[in-house]
Amino acid sequence: MALVYKTVAIAAALLPSSTLGFSSTHFSLPSYIIAAVPIIDVHHHNGRRRVSRRMSCGSLSNVGVMMSASTDAVNSEVEGNAEDRLFEPFGVGIKRDFKRRLPLYKSDIIDGLNAQSLATTLFLFFACLAPAIGFGGILDVATNGAMGTIEMVSSTAFCGVVYALCSAQPIQLIGPMGPNLAFTISLAQLAKKLSLPFLPLYAWTGLWTAAILLLSALTSASNLVKYLTGFTDEIFSVLISTIFLVGAVQEVAQTFLAPTATTATKALLTLLCASVTFGTSTILKGLNKSVLFTKKVRTNLSNFAPAIGVGVGSLVARAARLNYGSAAAALPALSLPSKFATTTGRPWLINLLDLPVWARCAASLPALLAAILLYLDQNITARLVNNPRYRQTKGRDTNSLLDGMHGDMLVLSLLTATTSILGLPWMAGATTRSAAHVRSLSLLDDEGNIQGTLENRVSGAAIHALIGACVLLAKPRALLSQVPLPVLSGIFMYLGLTSLQGLELWDRFLGLFQDGEVAPEQRWSKTVPRGVTGVFTIVQMACIYAMMKVKESSYGVVFPLIIALMPVLRFGLVKTGIIGKEFMDILDKE
Figure 1: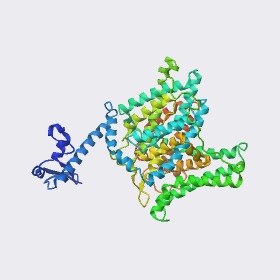
Figure 2 (figure 1 turned 180 degrees about the vertical axis):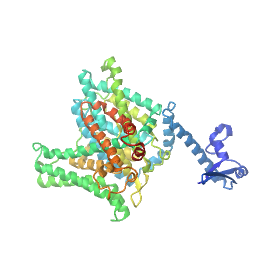
Figure 3 (figure 1 turned 90 degrees about the horizontal axis):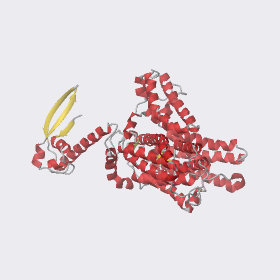
Figure 4 (figure 1 turned 135 degrees about the horizontal axis):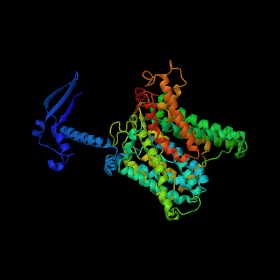
């Protein structure tokens, strides 16, 4: 393939515009000069370089486009070299991220005004609201009302809208996460042991955390995640998906295991509603790969599959209630506080002076752990969303996983500081919901292959604006009361299972139980022995099990460190010879 360089274009890109007397992006030269500019073609043939020289005969406009493209290519190369550094001068990475993305802001709005974006909003509205309500209830009990449902839902809505409108990668969603919840509960337990007021301790810890994240953004420390590989990404992704699946199944199972709290009829109805919601969503989502109906009908049904599933499941529950009465068939439903106020009635602003001076400084220690957790949550999620298979193009370098990370970390640090002084839960990259978001916005061909992504800010902002409306307005709250909790369990099953699809770790796990002679051929099948693949997979699954146990234990506060140690474990597997480097490079290929 010939590499074509224009001498004047290179000079225009490399020299300052003041030196040449014109802008490096919009300039013109006399046509006789342009016609005299040689084009150097470098051909590679049989391992040898052949250089030929020819004259330009293109039009002035074509040359301008070529020169602008050459300028952009050189600028991109310079920026790429900057991203190869672990740290950059203050603010360089942030400036680069927003310089690339902000000029496309109008496009980000227009591209979100369509049916596919609407379907994504309706689906992920429930998927983002339900965890906030569930986690809020858990937090209410663990903190004795210092934080509850209203704080969790308010933080989800506020942070989600701000992030969607201000971030450099708006396809990524932020929200409450199980590890964050576990850390906050551990911090509440620490405050109780030390006889310290929880909310001031939480606020100071959050401010220290925000400062660390801000320093990370200013120095482009997110470049460190280039040392993370698929080994860590897959473990974290499957962990979050497993949490969703296990939680949903447990919610349904508890209705059968607690006969005093429910009747057999309600238990069966719970299972029916969850199954109908999950089955409807799954079947309709697969229509885009079938031959039924027209292409437009298939596409719309597939896009709206989860929203339709919620509707069908809710109708089943309502029909049962009308036929058999509320006493026998009424199911628990989504509910929010009727008044927009803190759980205990406290002021929204936390009094930072209520914490002793020594504790204000000591709060920097748990803050370091919190910063590691938020940093990993945010950047691992960003790596998954930025995966080249989604073919995103706005403000991006080809095959880069780091695009937007520094700008987004700045936004996250400011949100962390704000929520801390308001006594609201911290938000970070929501892995499963972000993966569902980017998949729901993917543009597919007739064979189901991803051809691009509907990159926009509207869907993310609309999802969280609807959540905010449920907090502030009575009518949305009334509508939510018609959605039974078992229906949301079905949605979480769908969300968790679909998030596993496409992950190589999940494919390898299923491969442990398949006949290798007839199993579908995978990327590693012919180059990695089956036994080595099995060991690699079992190690990853063991890590997921261990992290779930630690998260649920009294040592949940050290959970972030376990995630951070995954690259060390990967190195140890190779160093000890348990898995050969040549096999690790294949199995852990990005």
